[in-house]
Image 1 (cartoon, helix red, strand yellow):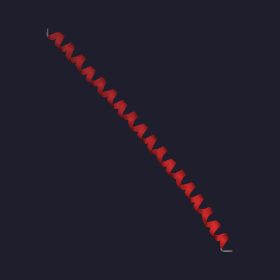
Image 2 (image 1 turned 90 degrees about the vertical axis):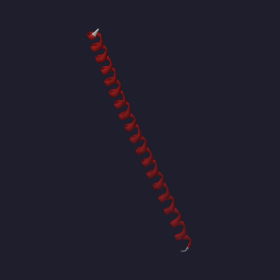
Image 3 (image 1 turned 120 degrees about the horizontal axis):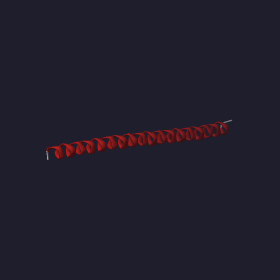
Image 4 (image 1 turned 60 degrees about the horizontal axis):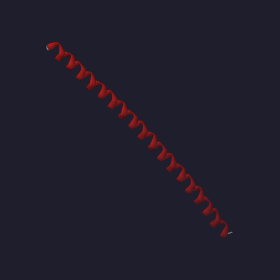
Length: 68
């Protein structure tokens, strides 16, 4: 009976260790996904800002022409 208890304890510990590794792996994947999404968002914000700058430059050029 003592041997069965030891085997059960080892199995339980191995199961817990596997769950911990699995959770760590999932957390790492979630963090990578989050970083990728944040990078995509920042790149989109930069593209939007560049478009707005280009549009403002055109508006300034148009205003300068009307004063000539």
